[in-house]
Amino acid sequence: MTRLPKLTDRYGLTLSTAVAAARDAYVEGVDLLLTVYPGAAAAFDRAIAADPGFALAHVGKARALHLAGNLLAMRESLAMALSLSDGSSARELSHIDVFRHLFAGQAVAALAAIRAHVETWPRDALVLSLAANQGGLIGMSGLPGREQDLIDFLSPLAPHYGEDWWFAAHYGMALSEIGRHDAARPRIERSLAQNRRNAYAAHAFAHLCYETGERDSGIAFMRDWLPLYDRAGGLFGHLNWHLGLFELHAGNLEAALRLYNDAFSADDHRGAVHQKLSDSSSFLWRSELAGYPRDPARWAKLLDYAREKIPRPGFSLADWHVALAFAASGDDAALEGWVQAIEELVKAGRYPSGSTIPAAARAFAAFQRGDHAAAIDLIVPMLPDRERMGGSRAQVDLVEATLLRAYLNAGRLAEARHLLANRRPGPASLPVAGIEQGLPARH
Image (cartoon, rainbow, N blue to C red; front, side, top):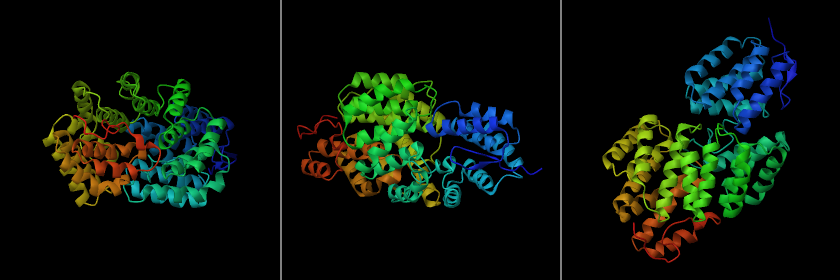
């Protein structure tokens, strides 16, 4: 029997359920996904219990399971949604198709489907969320110009969302990432004012503070906001990484290391596997650039984690952080094998980031060997394309900080000054030992 849409979601889109309880639980689940709060799967379960034939509730549950890394259950929920899709509206069928591509690992097809979908249904926020931020399908595309591409994608959609708190946070962060801080700030602050329990808005504000050099404001905000957030939230570790980075910039290594141990490198880390690896390895690397001593035990544990969880390359943001772990552990042979595997993917046309990560990985190894001239020669040519490595500017700044320390260690002070003079304003004062004295620091 055809299921006529009678109810709408929070964005005014019709839903193929006539059961108010199912609609309400579905809307709750979507909002939990959009705010990166735990509990979405349970909310979708309540929607399914109220209306077992509600296909979109099964898709929402599949997405929650996908984010939790439960891929078998994700596939089961998607299969159930597909089996129930007869009688769904054209919008819901297109919505399901987007997630079908995503769950199959078809990133290019999924992004194409998203672009087509939002042309007709621009307020389908759950679909849009897959490509609306630096960790989405545009941000992780590995393609040149992806920061501007994200702005170009979001800008035409802004009138459809008006004052909406979810869209404001994402659009605000995208603006912040291209240096439009004055346009970004009111959107991010409005999002937080409308929905304080929005982890993505908190994330966007942390990035804004980083980009504008407001270290102390970042510390104060994160210390105030984090107690609101459940430890099981997908951004719990990463938001603590942001606080840890601010503390490191302030010279508070002890406080930063407590966050490392208790949150973003904790054994019970609930976020994505690559997030624990990238946050932990980048923090340790940055602390050493700042002049703090190496802790081999931490690196050894992190390398074991990387080998277990990410046995082969294929996801650029994770891949260059695995390379950091290999380099810091002095395993040049393993790093070279890792890089060669990436280069095979590049040759096969299956690695959009191209040669940026192989160059950076070999530079990390050279830097650790003390061959600063080789590190410089590898980083300088790839630096204009570093956005292709994936992640935010705050994350990719690690490459520039490594180059700065290599210049200082090699005594190439004029080049170090030139690098600093040409950096974007705000985070130019990255904590790199020797920068204030203009003298090479002991490595």
